[in-house]
View 1 (cartoon, rainbow, N blue to C red):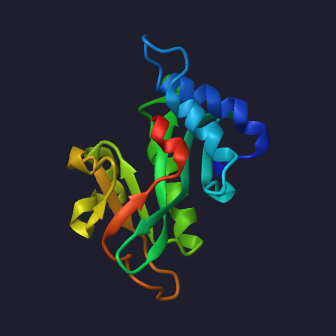
View 2: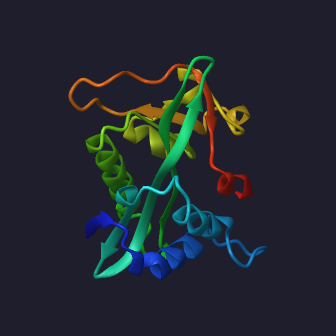
View 3: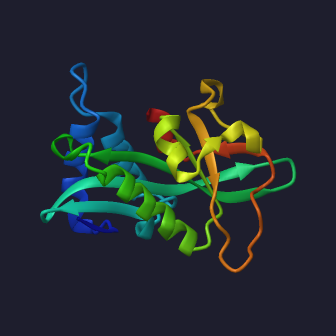
Length: 178
C-alpha cells in the first residue's frame, strides 16, 4: 500500500472509487463524485490534503480534507472538513480507509491545521480522536443529527493556538448538493 496526495492524473480513478463506494441502485452517479469534482475547482481545495491509497499500483482509497470556516460572534477561523472518504468495494475491510484517513489527518497537522469536522459513523471516526462537535460548541446544517456530527482538534505544531471559539461551521456551496 502507498499513501500520497492526489495528483491531477488520479481524477478518473478517484471518481471510480467514489462511484463504487457510494453506489446506490436509485442513482446513476453518487453526489460525492460531483462534490469532489466541484471542490477541485474551488478556493477551498487544498491539494496536499487530498489523499489517495494505492494498492498494487491501483488507486483504491480516498480521503479528502477541504477548507471550511468557523464563524463565531467575534471571529471567522479556518478549519477543515473530512469527506468524502471512500474505498473501492473490492478492497474494503483491509484497513485502507483507516490508513488514508490517518494520512490525511497527519498531513493536516503537519501543515499547522487545528480543527477538522466530519459527518459520519462515530464508531469509525472515534478511533482517530473525533468526538461530538457540539461539545466544542460547533454547529452546522447537520448538527441535528447528533453523534455523527463530529470534530477533532489536531495536535499543535510548535505550540499554536487551541481550538476556535464555538460557532457555526460554514461549508462551501458544493456541500449543499450532498
